[in-house]
Length: 118
Image (cartoon, rainbow, N blue to C red; front, side, top):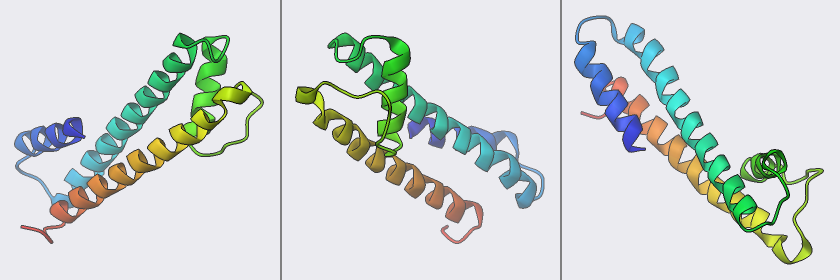
């Protein structure tokens, strides 16, 4: 989330003149792109964890399972061995917290952009 704040600060320092609506059209998609990128990095970290412990056989399966767990879809053709089955739920729980945090950050940025919080 510190990347998001740094991006926001740099963006405002570069764009001092101009209409607020024009700034928002560039700032918010950039923030969302940063957040989506960081969520994908988290998916890759979970996939690497599954590979490192030998839970899943290959990178494609690990990423596929991780994306399904991270997005809380939950059903997948790739499954974990019985004694690791709960780990997918733990990943989903962590992802819900990360998505909630991202939503809160976007809400704070939107409030600041609209001048409701000075």
